[in-house]
Length: 92
Image (cartoon, rainbow, N blue to C red):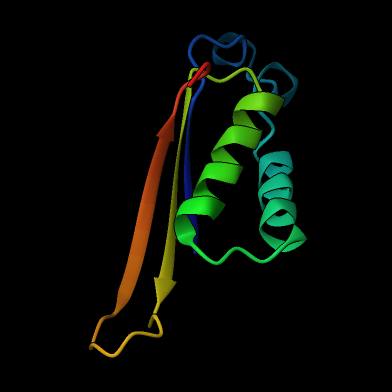
């Protein structure tokens, strides 16, 4: 399960209400799905980092937060889920 937060800063869409003037979230979801399925990731940390780095490379963002959660992880403890969060800004 993935959760994303994109820090956009000032975008024209606040005035125009046009998708062309902001980040197309459907496109972002397709890209994230592709990244997650391209190869196997053994750690949630690596998956989150790859997604954050790619989003910063492909879009003009001021920051991106990615959270990946794994329900019922394969560990010998009664845990509902484990999760990892990554925050990135351009140039990091």
